[in-house]
Length: 246
Image (cartoon, rainbow, N blue to C red; front, side, top):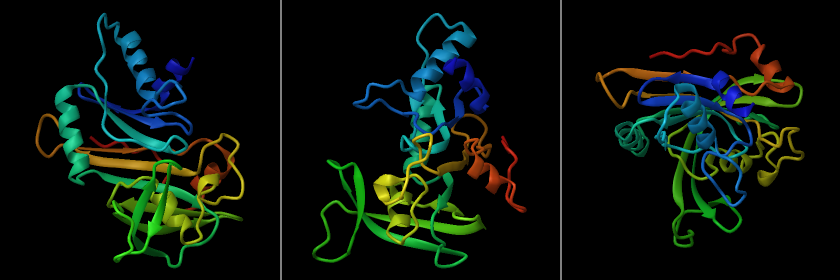
């Protein structure tokens, strides 16, 4: 059933790439839980759909936190994998997120820049002060935001991240009193019914890694179907179409 359902969440596919709308709670790569990953589900789906007798190549190019939803791209060839990895590493992939937070931002739009340190034991990131006392291995984190809409209790923000640090958006917003809905780890008051958090990778845009130079892929994913996201999608002026441009 789950393998069949994944077909409805494919945003784009060709011989080299497959782009999927990840659900909250899905794993990109395996962890100690031993739960199946989205990559494994996609591999099984492709094998069944295409009646492939041998192994199916599917490479992970980037990650989303397990409770986060949204756009994820996998490579179907080794050439695409190496080139996509380079694009992500060089900051040539435009990543845009939507977040529902419990307090308003300080302005209609702006940016936050911090030093983040990852505590691996707690699987949590913290902002540290620069200077002589800064924690070793702290890394620069930069994001820009734009206020999109206000509901009764939550605010919709659009975010672009220039760096891809561990829990970056969750940590930087929480440090300024804006807690992502459902994100207990970073200070939200209550969990979401589905166990996820209301942070959604809205879009990815990049130059296609294989083939004609200058060919672009732009994939936009609808947020999870639930009442609060549905409310914001119907606020006048908020884009709600799935726009895949290749």
